[in-house]
Image (cartoon, rainbow, N blue to C red; front, side, top):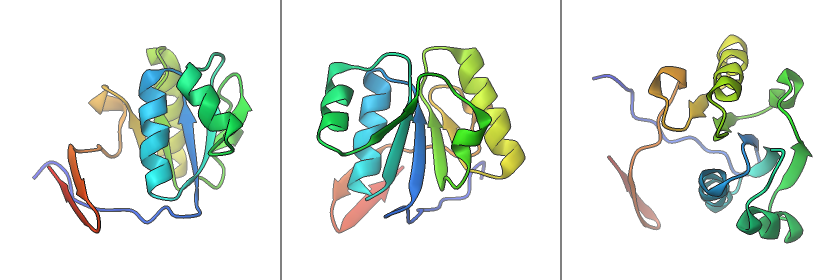
Length: 126
């Protein structure tokens, strides 16, 4: 078994998403379903992500990643188009023991997000 299956309770806990494109938008929406408090770091924002910010469903934490932005986070998602940024986010989180997922880069992840079937309250992952 390569991964230990686990579900994290992140309701009302801080999570950071680094990136502002369509992938980051999808991740923010998933985190919102779980009730997370979400900060976003990105220089540019997808229109759908801008709408989520205007609606108060997340907050902007800056234009560029800084290691201090992960302080207090329950988990972090690196969804930047820049693999170097994603790798830096991974290194900072791994050092601090914060679960990190760099989208589409398994070598830069301490956890993976499986495919989901959501029939709340039943949730199946695989």
